[in-house]
Image 1 (cartoon, rainbow, N blue to C red):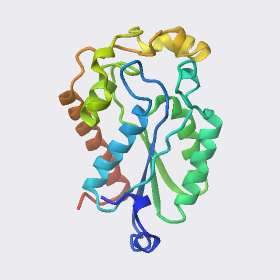
Image 2 (cartoon, rainbow, N blue to C red):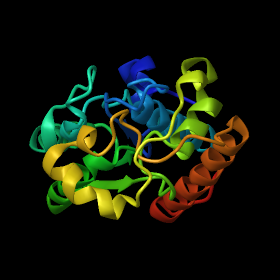
Image 3 (cartoon, rainbow, N blue to C red):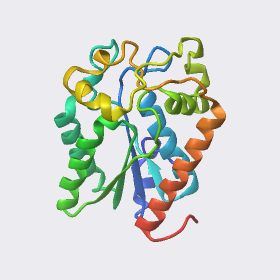
Length: 228
């Protein structure tokens, strides 16, 4: 499964039908028990799992910074804002489509959704073949059972289970207005939106497998040929 950054340019020139999977994540707090790289780690993992099944897929280096202003009250969060994220992705896709015919943004941070969707609309209006995809997991919104389970599957050594505690457990629809106005810390002192209780590596592996299956279906429908 080739990573784009590990190839020399002639190797890429020999792959004229490649699709480039660009993991789009963030560097932001994920509660007291998960690393700042959760969104990026998950995006990279999903892109890699899909590329392992499709020889025509390449994995780009991840975009590890995004629109995370709602988490800025927590140390370690590095946000470049919505507009900068949008512009970065527009220019990245413009550049990438000079080398490959298709680009898929594998986006795993909800705060990036607006920037990602706007960027895709812009580049598609220019005739570039780009799409965005998210895993579409339901459940708690941030650093709860879902993300904790997935990280226990991906990198258990980076999960501090002893520090895992619940945060704001109200539905995200109820929390969103205050969260958008005043940030996550005003609704959750520990930065968790949900409850990591019950998280497990087995559940995380199942979630990853299901999401990878959905991603492969999208690629097959888009590219027009099944997994070789």
